[in-house]
Length: 171
Image (tube, rainbow, N blue to C red):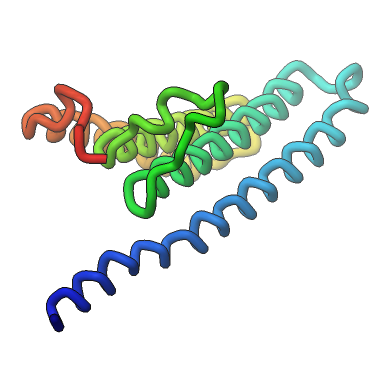
């Protein structure tokens, strides 16, 4: 009886993650506000901005977009994998990937997004190389390479353990 109570308590503790996912929704709202703020800043300067300044502004929007997409991936995949399944039958436009990402897929998508965000930060620094110190550029390159190598090692380890070869059946 004590064992069942313990197991039920442990099983129900997964709901403690729900407020964290709601916190990520608040973070997503903050990303939307920041994106709108950035667009409002860009629009009046489109005609007077240099090409490189415009590219930097657009890269900032891409960076915000990738980060927001990453938040969505974590919210839905995390909730589906660790808390409860979401009934998508009432939503005909429900993206197919949302119910199919297992923990391995979540890790790979997460790291892929981080690599893309890191690449954009590095590209922004290269576009504005005159204002970026050699030390900062070196660290941006090192950090990006570490993310890329980490992603490759994670994908390779998932492949050799058999997790990357077929979709996981345990949701």
